[in-house]
Image (cartoon, rainbow, N blue to C red; front, side, top):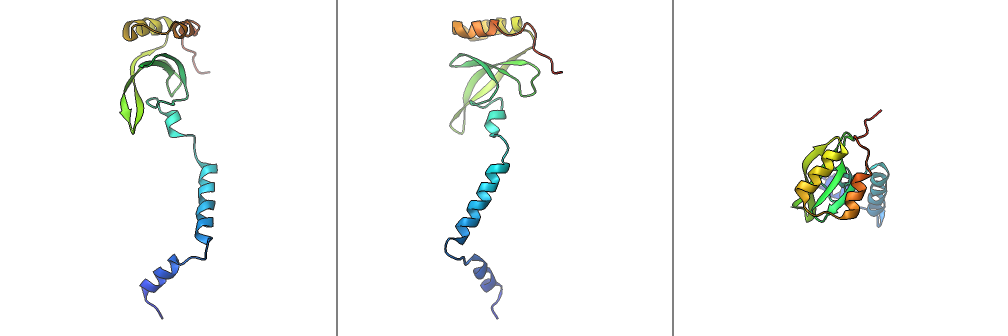
Length: 127
């Protein structure tokens, strides 16, 4: 009878194609049960899902991940080769958000400022 090393070798022996099929089935299961992309839920991510408006290449406004305020962000370097965003200021009213955008961003896209002016006067409160 073989020793422990032989048993280990036998575990690694696979029928042709069998190992790949099992691996594929596991990968399929992971895809079905996987949560949404992490990057879409991180405020610092370039593909964050709750972007309200891109003011210019270096600034944008988002709804925070908890849905309680607007956040003015600045593009601040890169992480893993992708742009990283940092919060500059946090706002509950449209007017304070627009003032901060004009003060911190300098010239903004007129269409972006129009989009900001269309926001509700106060941040919507969760029901």
